[in-house]
Image (tube, rainbow over all chains, first blue to last red; front, side):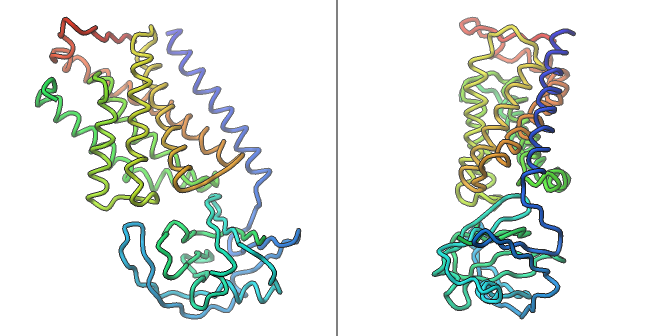
Length: 150
Length: 192
């Protein structure tokens, strides 16, 4: 029984550590409300309401995790247009971060390439990064929270 | 392989499949929890690894979990269940198996209860799986990575408790297996 209690004690202790780390995580993370995307650039933070973004039909083919071609037909906006709207021009790369902290990086060259990098509407009030012709499907970040432009 | 009889192989295959498909079953619920914590998973993997730990406890042979991880990766790849790791998903299956085998080899003779053994194995396997996924896909750093590992370890311990509940009624049925009666090898004895 004492040994069983030791194992339970370890579980409770780890649970307390997890709760503490969780509290720190919630206090330190960039909080972005649903339906908005934040863009950090030159120590400034811009907030974009997704309802205000003019979305157009985006069509193309991407590769999924299994290497299969997947036809995309969704509403979206080129990332370049979004950045131009905020007058963001001098940058080398953009880190796209999801609500679960998953991230991917897009280079300036890729953003400038026509019909390549888009933010598309994946769910209601949620955007997804889409890079056409990219063999690395891991960069298609879902549920975007914020972009860090450097 | 010749030391594994048919019943053992069927049991190991069952554990492989249960581990693989149980993950898919509980993923939607687990994702709700991890989404609210703003981390990219970790809960369903612990549950999935519980079946590997159960198998290693019942069939205490060296390399058992690694082989099972390998089989799981082959099944996953052939069925297209590659997840976010893509073609590298086989690493994500094999590494936790290797951790379970290595750790089991270290703790099998230590006088601790079955529950504690399973909790340790499951927690470390879950953390190894989390670290592998992080190295291949997520690339988390700092606090999110710490939270991701903590959630993996905590759920790993909880699944260890659950695994011990599963093992206890099964173990007596497997105690007549050759591996438990081999005189040249040390018999593994578990206690509550």
